[in-house]
Length: 172
Image (cartoon, rainbow, N blue to C red):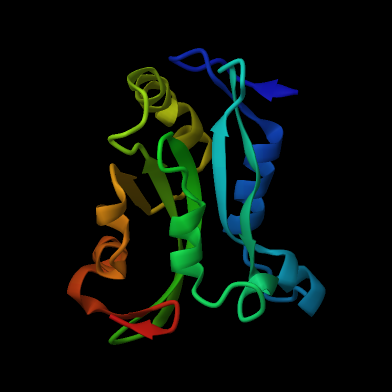
């Protein structure tokens, strides 16, 4: 079942909304197995017929991957982004300010300069459709090239400016 027609005519699938809700709700009572299956990052794309926003198959990082197959989740996430096409992403950032440890979801609109114009236009016009379903997102970041992403300082700025002292356990 698909939800509501949006301005571009693109629909957000229930599966995408379910993933967002799972990422948004941090279950303190979750057992180790549930914690390992939590998503750290995930990409969303338009379906082949350009009618739906869907999960980008296999493009995710699970909490259980951290320290095993994924050493640096931020760098791993950056490498998941396609160099020549657009994507939407959710990244569950773990960071510390001078006062406290925090976790926040960041909605990222990846629109590299090298992406086809048609793709950039469709993704841009469909962004509100997915954002409306992602209620409670505090941080949004539009990224137009790898140079904006490579340095974790840029994400730290988005999360809390100069008060952020570490991101994913690495000092800023």
